[in-house]
Structure formats: C-alpha cells, structure tokens
Image (tube, rainbow, N blue to C red; front, side, top):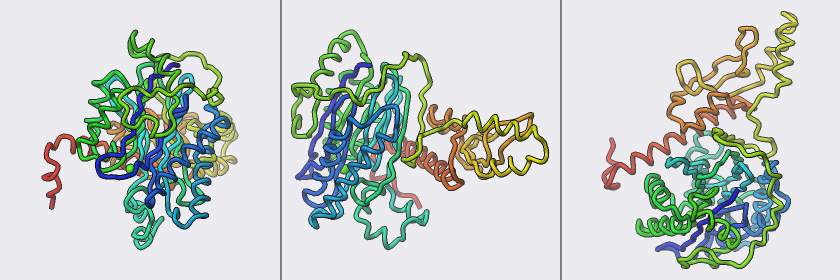
Length: 429
Ligand code: CA
C-alpha cells in the first residue's frame, strides 16, 4: 500500500504558542493537541509524540493492544512529568494515532482531535469526541462541583497526562485505494464545519495542497486555536499521483511542527528513518470489502465483534441436551449483551446473543432506543445489524448513547452548515 501525505500545522490567529504536535512516521501518524499552562500544553503534546515514536517498534498492527500501549506509555510519561514539576501540573494532550498496514487503518484515540475518512466523495467522522463534561455529570461519573474545577472542564473529557490511567478508544477499519484519511486538531473542526472540510477534501486532489487549504480556511474563519492537519491518501489517485506518491513516501518523515511551519511546499525532510517494524506481514489483497469498524473502549481486550464459534456450538449442544440444561443456557445468555437492530429498525440493547437455535431465539429486547439504524453511516449500520457484543448492560447502553451522540453531532454539523448566519440560529425558546 502506498501513501501520499499532506501535513500542515499553524499557530492560528489568536494564540502565541502552537501547542499542537504531530508525527508522520510511516506507517504511523499522530496528531496531539496540548493543553495546560503557558508552555505546558506544548510539552504535553510533544512528549506524547516523542514517546510514541520512541516506542513504536514495539507496536504491531496485528495486535491493537500494542497501539493502546503506545498511547498509555505517552500518558504515563506526561503524567510523571506533571507530577514532578508543579508548573506543569494539570497539563494534558489529546492523541489521535493512525497505523496503516496492508489493508487496514488502526486508530487509537483519546480526546477531541478527530479522524475522518473520505471515501467515494463522502466524509465520515471515525473517532468519537471525548468532550462534554456535562455528559459525565449526567452519567454520575463526575459531580457538578468537580466538573467546574476539572482542569479540562472546557476542553475535553478524556486526555493524556491528566491522570495515571486513561481509557483509549481503539478502532479498526478496512481501507482501500482511493480512501483519504484526515487527522486534525479541534482548531480545524471547531472553526470550519463538516461540509466545508468535506468539500475542500473533495476538491483538492493533492494532499499537501488540501492540508494547506484546510488550515487557510480555519484561519479565515477566525483561527482562534492552533490548527494541525495530517492527510493520508491511500494508494495513488491518478498516474501522476502514483509517481509522486513514491517520492513523497520517501521524503516525508516529519516530526515537529517547526519543521514545516509556514512552508508552502510538501514536507522535505531528508530520510525515512522508520524501519517498518510496525508493519504487519503482507496480507492477500482484498477488494470491494465493506468497511469494518470496531470500537472498543477497554484497552486490555481485543476488539472482538464476533461471537466465539465454540460458544455457539456449546449453546447448540446445551439446548439439544434438553430441559435439564435450560437454566445453564439462561445463565450464559443472561451474561451476554449486545447492541442490535429490532424488527422495526430501531437500535436496541439485547440480552443474549444474536443467534437462533432450532427456531428458538437466544435473546431478549431490553431497551429500544429512538435511533433508527438508517440514521447511522452505512458502515456503522452494518455493524449494528450484525450485533455489537458488549460485556455489560451498561456498556451496551453507553454504546447506544455514543451512536446517538454521533448522529446528533453529524446532524448539528449539517444543520449549522445550512445556516449561513450563525448568529441567528440559537434563538429557540
Ligand atoms: Ca486545540
């Protein structure tokens, strides 16, 4: 798989310091958006990027937990620095990491930086924003008082470096030639809306020019925050692009914002230092495969979305053994949860497993949401239709909440982009 890369970071128009950091270390890419005191945010984000680069040889595309481990190592390093220096206390950073292998994109994500996929002209947000302190309060995970004093109260609900531990979202997705992945800090996504991002990414075939146009658009919209954009084009878009692709691939190891800040040209650092230890062994080429996305919020479990065949077989045997085993089955099913779609097309939390044995359904509807599966992006809708396994009722419910939030956010973005004058959109009773 070949890539073409565009990258641009900019301090914006209001800030004095660029606290964003990024890493282009093929096939590994990171955007980190630091926050904290005067220089602390810069230290947090650069520590994240440095730690991830340093430890990247231990990461393997075959094991998503090794990606979480990179992010957790960065978290520990920042946390230790903050603990050891009172001027750095409370610093933190977002971290959105992408590792590409021969057919997949693997993301590890914390915070409100974002990853998007542009495929066939359609833009989809891949990562979930860890924002809304209010949501934590609502869920009882944080008191209103604590929320007010929370060091990141106005920024994110999850960040690296603010605690000794952090939950990392892991997302795997099939990618194919022609896909374009964008990773950016909120200095982009908070300044220009979803449709503007989509139209620039659609209009501009050259990833470096596209990155620069996105940053320019964010600055024209006010540039209130630091802006960082990394664009990775999978495969070659055209014949000319194919040739350039190999060239840019050789010359695009860029680690610090300073290296290219303000430069209109493609990153031109000298050598590809990355030795490829992260890359997985080549897999057979796959074509026309539907995208698969798994979201797993607990970093010490593999992101399994299929039910172990053994469990299904065991259940079949148990059922066939007759009434004596009935309670055993109920016990197993009573400890399994999943998010699926009910007969009316609504996203639903189920107890049990999405299987039938001898005409006998092995699940019960627990909670039907107001969310229709058709409101979800195609790849998410397909996943939900298959059933997304969860370890607890709570996990299943919060997964539905995440889906609802994502749909609402997408709708808000679309609504906003339809309103040319933002100042007149909030006058609801
Ligand atoms: Ca920011």
